[in-house]
Image (tube, rainbow over all chains, first blue to last red; front, side, top):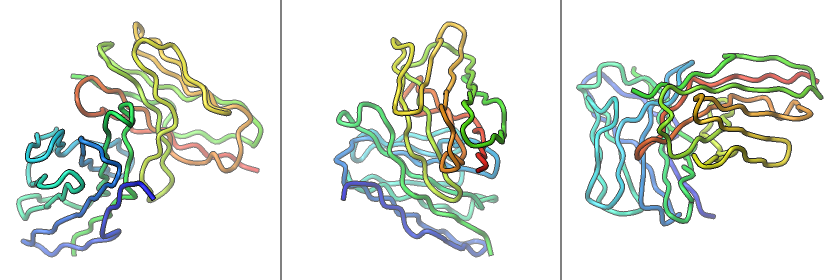
Length: 113
Length: 110
């Protein structure tokens, strides 16, 4: 089945620890995105990538880092510099075949221990 | 800076009612507007996408309209069902990424 897979579904971070959220897609989409969602809030853009080996900061990139070494993969690292990481993280992708519609993964819920 | 507002924040209706969700945006220079559905603790599912040159799109019991000049969109749901209960998010695309509203949480009672 084609789609976007995010893992893990739940993640816990200890203070001072870096954690990495996985996002994989088999839709052959060029563009991938990371959003953060807080309760009662809309989604806010963290980072996005339009092609392999290139990515840009979104509105709230501080405390996060990404890489795009493969077209299918766009992992997000939440660093210790992110002081309020508790949130629901959503990955999305789109491409020419998707006609600009963004397809989303099921999300990762990150909590701080 | 583009801002997207959705009204109301929450809505409760009995089954069978027709209803309208509202979305407004501050900058009319958009490529498209999209409506998504989100179930609790889940990702987003695209419902309808309206290109900036279009006025409306329809899918089944859903109809979305776009008035770019006034910065408004509506999502019309006909004959609502309990399965329609979810949060509905509106998003505009002006550059590469989407800008989202905070959503309208809909509850349809049987």
